Every structure is written in C-alpha cells, then in structure tokens.
Length: 395
Image (cartoon, rainbow, N blue to C red; front, side, top):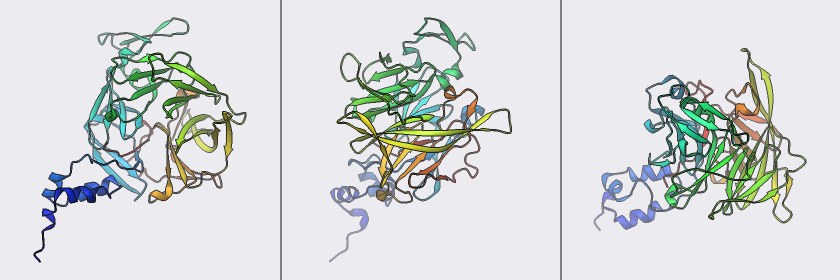
C-alpha cells in the first residue's frame, strides 16, 4: 500500500483532529506543520475551546515614557516562561479590563477599544465623550480638555487627556465576547462610584440609576449583572430590557470587612471575596500596601445570604483588573487548586497616597500563606500600569 504524505491528509480529517486539541497553543503548532495544513485550518478555530489558563500581562513603560517598543511581555503559569507578543494596538493605551480574551483599552483621546490578544481584532466602543457626566470636550483647551458634571451637586470640573485615560474608568466588564453580537459592557467609574453601560448597537453610554457606590466589582451571572459595594452589599442589575433597573439588593455579611472586594462566578455559583491589605512606609514619603490575606463567601441563593467558605477544593480564582475568573486546577498544568491568584489592581481613590508595589501573588486558603510569582526578571521593572490576567482566547 502506498503511503500518503501527511501534507495530503483530507481537510475533513484535519478538522476532526483539530477538535481534539484543547489548548490554543497546541492548535497553532498543529496548524503550522505544513503549508497545506495551515491553508485548511483557520487561525480562529471553528470549534469552541475550553477556557484557557490566563497569562499575566506585565507592565509596560510605553504609557509613561513613550517607548516605541510595540512588544508586550506575558507570563505563562503552565511552563513558567515569558511570551513576547507584538501588540502595537496597545501602545500608549491603558488597559482597564480583560474579559473573554479581549482587552479594554483607553488612549489619550476619547476613543475606547476592545482588542483580542491573539487575533488582534479590534472593536470600537462609544467614546468617553458619550458618558452622561461628560458635558464637553475641546482638544484646544490644553490641560482642561474635558468638562464633567458632578451629578450629585451639579458642579462642573475639568480633566485633561491623561487624567481621563488613567483615572476616569476603574474597570470594564463584558457579558460575553463581542463576537457573540448581543453583548453588554459595564464600566465602573473611578471617581464617582457610578456604573455606566453600553449595549451593542447603541452609540453612547448610559448611567444605571440606583447603582451608585456599587463600584467595587461587577460580574455577569445568570443573565444579570451583580455589583458589590465597599460594605459588601450586592446590587442585582437587569440591563437586558428597555429600562435598566436594580432588581434587588443582597445585604452584606457581618463578616465582610475587606479593603478590596471581588465577585466571582464559579460553575453556577456566586462567590464574594474580601482582600485584606497592610500599609507600610516606603523609602520615599509614600505609603506602600501589601496583600496579607483573603476571605471567601458563597451565596446561598435560597435565603440570599453569604456563607463562609473554608476551602475552594480544586478551584482557583484569578482576581485583579480582569473580569474575575474561576477554573479547576486539575484541568491545567503548573497551577494549584484552593488558591487565589491575584494582581495589583489597587485604586488610589480607596486610600489617599497609597500605591501598590508589584503586589502580585498566590494566596493559599489551606494555611493562609502567600507565594510570590517570580515574573519580574527584567521584564517588569515598573509598578504601573498594573499587571492584569488575560485569557488567550481567539474567539
């Protein structure tokens, strides 16, 4: 029997084999075997991949120094290696969110973008000038390009281009990938504690009435958005209809007292995470904070109460400036269950003058210990912009 060269395998057989690959990097290697395979397999797979293990995107000097380097470095937990990707689209732009493999980017203009880490596809969001509290923008008024209104007392104030890029928005969360078409975006406004949203097909941002101060974190869960306040109260937001509304408010647990709060959706369940910080004196006349612990609670949906959680079992949480993520450790290499992988997403509005100092690590729930992530080594000498977890997802 005459042997058939690998390069001549039927396209339908290649497609069947490719569906058995669950790691996108393996799919790319499979596709790169020869010209024939590469031409028959698209760079964006036709089948749905399981959620990939996040990479840690490291700080870049571009935001502050104007470095012309378009390369961004990422730390891979599985093999403890660094990956360097050319991302000119992220140059001079601040990342204020990461959901489903898409980065949310702001630049020193009113523009906002979604950028897919792997395919480099972009999706433009409504500009900063469409937020209801932004009442004027004039690029010729140097240093005072934006005029905003305080929606509590009606006073006007100004912000420059860099301030709007760096501090106007704290975090942005997506309901799903923008490729799904019918998606919703929620933005946490840093200075005012308000929530704004955008539905695909609209041309502007809208405020969510009744949701002020639920600005610690936001997640999408069972078709609704959940937003948590500094005190641990959680507002349930229905943004799917014509009239966005706060459906209900879940009261805080008396045990809630963290410095930063997160919400995590985990395989049909909702968790509330408290992060505890210590402030330390720096060499300079600044305050440095370090993470010293976490506590976890799970929502009892029958009574809308939070129950303390002593162990996550095989689960691991990824927290920070990204949309909070939960995965099973046994499905991946190089990671451990019953752990919280966290990054430095501290907002200076929480404590005047305090800042982070590469506050990135792994918290172990079994003994309360914290391990460092050894991913600086010449790739990350800057504190800002902060590290952020990014899921490499081509879809």
